[in-house]
Image 1 (tube, rainbow, N blue to C red):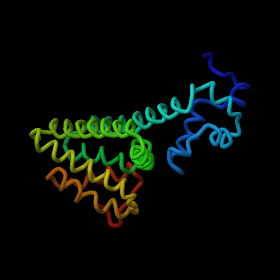
Image 2 (tube, rainbow, N blue to C red):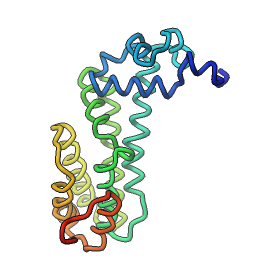
Image 3 (cartoon, rainbow, N blue to C red):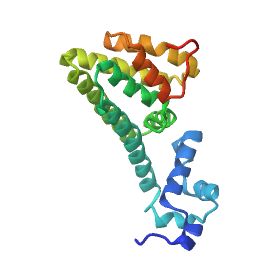
Image 4 (spheres, rainbow, N blue to C red):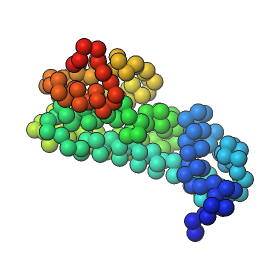
Length: 213
């Protein structure tokens, strides 16, 4: 299919526009609300224009899963593979995911896990994502000298703690979370984070602690 020109886009929208609207509905009301007619109304487009981009609703849902997989799983895995001179720096790279929705979208993760309660297919996708993410965290620890069992236990502890935050919809002020970060790092790695690593982490997230680190 040829790309739509500007005139076409006005009445068809775009594939990304349909996906963005579908994500909004998924986050707001769950997967049962992600239907073609409500999406068309939200976008102020005709229902038939949907079919320029997707074969049917199932194709749209498949695209939602793919986008989640690309964003959250790839985002987390990439952070485990980011350059780090120490395990502390590596863990803080991973913690970027929990504070930057461009790397890992916690609201989307919650919506997908809720969807999985209704769908065996999505449940299998969640299981596969969990395995991939824990394996990536395990490799990160192994690369910094931890034996395989210890690396896996630490990886699981980090990951399951964060999934617990998401599943319980825990909300923390940035100040509160930042105060807890050093203790989390020490628990997860067995090492105290040096002040310069914390300062660099704080700077990435626009945080300035009172009185410095």
